[in-house]
Length: 393
Image: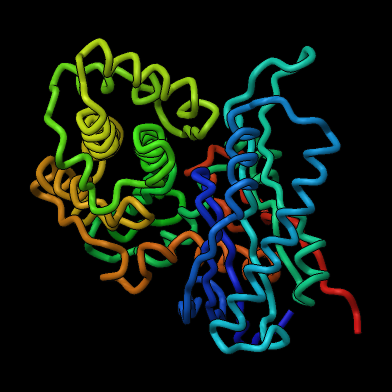
């Protein structure tokens, strides 16, 4: 425990498994006088073969216990490599870093309990062994953030709302923080909100569905639709979009969370079948998936938010914040709400989640709870994560 500022590295790899984002941040104090500053950020790709295996396992394809154990440790070493490479790039000696917060790689998330061996059970699994990171880097590491919330009946997601609240709470403006990662999620922060008034949930797919279609149609030559070029070359098919908007997940009331288990390979196959039925060309289908991402967010706002709270700003982060078609659709569909990238409020779009897990690690290190029960559905506050201490000496 220390009252001095701490330098913390946050590591984040999302459901798209497209790489590791690293953020270097400096923190001091405690809420409501928490001082948080993002200093630098960067990213590294996963080795292609390992990424392919991560996605295969996350699609619930078979893996042995031994292989899963190996993947957990291998990822730990890869996260450690990313942390050390980031230190080198930032010209900061690892010995100056006080703490690492590593989200890990989600390979399974079941937020809602289902029957398992006679008892209703919810569970989540993020891998990337924290002890391996701490040993390789010499830096105490906090990892595996979600289970503590789930142990209290929460969905273990979303966790970033705690950070959104600290960053974006405003005395007069109602704000929604929208993260467009593999999955799209929102944090609703009413004007002058207390923590108990903040709520958050996953709205549906974002880059996960678009990227899967792009990779399929380009035979792997493109991993994502840069500047929405493919989508913008496609034609609009309203009937196809209407079918997508009937997705049952959109109607579920929050708290709710989702992932590759729902919007993965099986869902992509359903979308491809829809495309065939509506005679959609590849660019048409990518366009429909892109607009579906935006309109599913709009649907969530109208269905669950705007009837209760006055919202002035939508603050967008994540890879999807660079998609001009998504942003244009959001602006057109929400004419009375300012749509702004998170960089306008101090945290670049690509760094937001890595920065968030640096901050969550800082709170864990100080034995402070950092879930928002109003967002996750937990019975109460939880101190998140597991601490792997750096080797002595």
